[in-house]
Every structure is written in structure tokens, then in C-alpha cells.
Length: 370
Image (cartoon, helix red, strand yellow):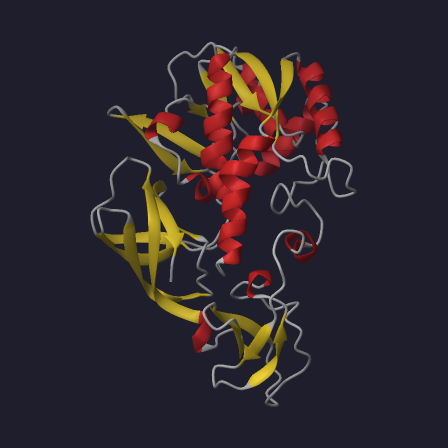
């Protein structure tokens, strides 16, 4: 089955590779591929959340069982490491601050930068690793002493959006074995080599929330502060439970039944006025309040270490969105930037990430401010 192995080799001759294993099919196949390529492979299972160990929604125990089973089957050593304290301090605290401020953060982006490619990387190096690997769908390319972060060959599974905050130092020691092959091929490999988790469902949602209802989880940590729901014209049409529990573009769970003006169009969350604790909703998917030709972003991180020159690129303002043609304007010592889009973008959401691309190269991005 060697013909199925990725040809991506970002490092010259690493001997020992520590791979993050979650119990899913992606990291399992990635570990097998590395072993087949002749590396000394060690699996590392990261436990990043402790609050719900006995909760019905928590899958940590089963995931660990799956990791051990896969490791035994492919013949590699595996260990578990607890990063729960680091996760709470570096990721979850920011997650709560952002929601309390009325924004909608993407903790998976911060988790990659602070846990999977920082705490995990440091631990792996302490084990004598020459490189780390994960089951992410992305690629790295070493050229002229620099490392480029590239989209995966399988565009439908590309995860470079979540990796844009990684630095040159982090990427220099990373391997993405799945970057060159489609997800359908990964499933086929898993079945052919007899992995028990070949048909295991992909995990969805935020890792520490799992499959539980999002509002139920968030209500544990943030107070409910009710306020008015208004239309763009200022008409009060209802009451919200707290701005933190809503995100721009949201359609379900607003609490508005039926049409307010007879046109029958669905209601969408269109704006959050934090200063006045007011939630604005608009009818119709293409309502002007849901469309934007410009955005401003802050806390920029650039993969190369320096901001790209102003000009024409493409960008995503949310995961799984098609690339949108845009013009970059940088300012404020490259920490902030603005994007202008040829086509209006739908529900541009403060707190989410705007990620910039030059073709298949992920340049970096920032947190949407407005």
C-alpha cells in the first residue's frame, strides 16, 4: 500500500516523530503512514478539558481507548498528557472574555496556536522528537529558509484556516501526512489496514463542548442579561436572553415566531449593540444588514513573520466559505488590517477570523473587529 502514502516531506530526515492522536480516523491513518515511511513514531493523546469527565457528552475515555487500540494495532508507543490547565488559561479564558464582550470567538484557532503547536510541541521535543505531526488537512512547504503553510490537496477538508496563527518556528517542526490525499482515501486506507475506527464519525463543534447544547454550556459560565430585540427600523419585536448567546447570521433559536410584517422571510441575527444591550434582527438572507463589502481586523498574525504588501488577494471570513477576492490594506505596525471585497460578504462576524490567501498559500490573518 506504499502508493497511498503522502509524498509530503517537509523536514530532511527526521528520525523520531511524535504525533497527536485523538482517537479519530485522521490521526490514526496519519500515524500509520509515518510508521510505513520508516519513522520512529510515538503517539500522544492530549487531554485538554476536565470539567465534564463523567458527563454524557464527554468522549475522552472512549477516545483514549481508541487511541490505545490503534497504537497497538500499528505497533507504536503511545502516552497521554494533560494540558487542561494550559487550555483553561490560554484558550478558555479568552473564549469567555470574547463572548462576554459580544463577539463570537473561534477557540479552535487559539487551541492550535497555544496548545497543539505550543504546549504539545514543547512536550514532544522534551521526548527527543525531531518533528511533530497531526492529522490536520494542510501542507507545509520549505523554500529559501522559510516555511509556507499551504491548503490541503482536498479543498473540501482544508484546515489551513484554523492554522493561520502558527509561526515559522512552529511550522518548521511540523508534518501533515494527510495534506496530499483526499479524505475519502483516508477512509479507504483505514479500512484496508483494518483500523477499528475506520468508520468513526468525525468530531464536530468545539472540543470542550462536544455534542451538548451550546447555550446550555455557555449558561454555566456567563450570566443572562435580557434586552430588547429590534428590527433595523427600531421596532421592538421581542426580548433576548443575553447577547452572548447569539451570533451574526444565526437563524434558529432567536425566539421570534412567524413574520412581523407579512413577507414571510426568516429572521436572522444582524447586529449586536453591546453598549445598549440590544439585538438587531433582519428578515431575508440577503438583507443589506447582513452584507458587508469591508471589514477591519486586529491582532494580525502572519505566517512569514511579516505582513504581506497591500494588494489583491483572497480571504475567508469563516471556515468552509469559498475564497473571496479582496484588497488588503495594512496599518498600525501590521497589527491591524482592512479588507475590501469585490462581492459583499454575508454575516461578517466580530470575533471570527479573517484569513488571507495568495492562491494556495495561507498568508495569515486576524480577528474580525468590525
